[in-house]
Length: 396
Image (cartoon, rainbow, N blue to C red; front, top):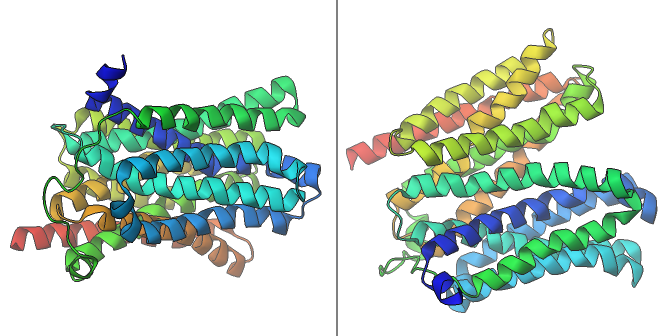
């Protein structure tokens, strides 16, 4: 069995799918426990907010450092270490607050799993891109769909577990979720890993930064992250405050359906990529995304608004993996530095999108529809960027 795994790139791709499920757990488990953590450890909302801020801040730092460090250490060592750190952070959530000051214990756990999540985000895409598969775009899209399925599964199973066994059992659940990165860590010690650069000399960081197309791709990644998270992070609050839908229904009809449709979009493209050109699918998705944001603003029709919120998940599904595939095709010698900086740009977009919504809404007397209206800018810029890259490619 072990020999079969070592010789199969299908096992490598399966391990990569589990890597993105691990990433979904790392990013979304703690937010599901925010109110429970605040109650158990007497934390203020400001202290709770730091948990999310610290997670993404550490991941941004890891993205930046990975551009220079990963190639020296090696992909296998780094991806195995990433899963060890992710598991250590999840287990740490259950253990550290009870053996040291609770808040310090939580933040230490966040740092551990954030480092693991950051490394995973940088490495998984180039690992799959390097596998000797015929349909690279399809493999990349299907890979990223597993983040969505992981998010949906995490929400549903965590909710069911806490409802069945009580909210006080969350430390047990944290340890159970840690079994996924621990198991995948073992798998990554065995599976074959292809040469990411495919025998080519990778572009130096200076040459990479001197490529105009690379800066356009970074812009696309920022817009991809912003288009996705501007709606995802605010969908529940928008449904409750502006559309007067209950919180439970808002969570199910908002973030959960959003994530499910985003995963469906990626899975469908993964299945039919041989029939649908990537550029055409991304252009069509950009137009659909603009329409979804405009529909969500129409608070006079709650049904139309919620349909817009949900379909937005489908429209943004291809943005992130599609941009990675465009980069691999356009700059085949980009190497680890390219993937690391693109992950950094994507994370910046994930932070910028929700921030723009919040700031515009605050300046508009709390009207979230105004914030979502301003976010139409992100898919509009995505559309423009894709056209510019296509034009540059045609000229070359």
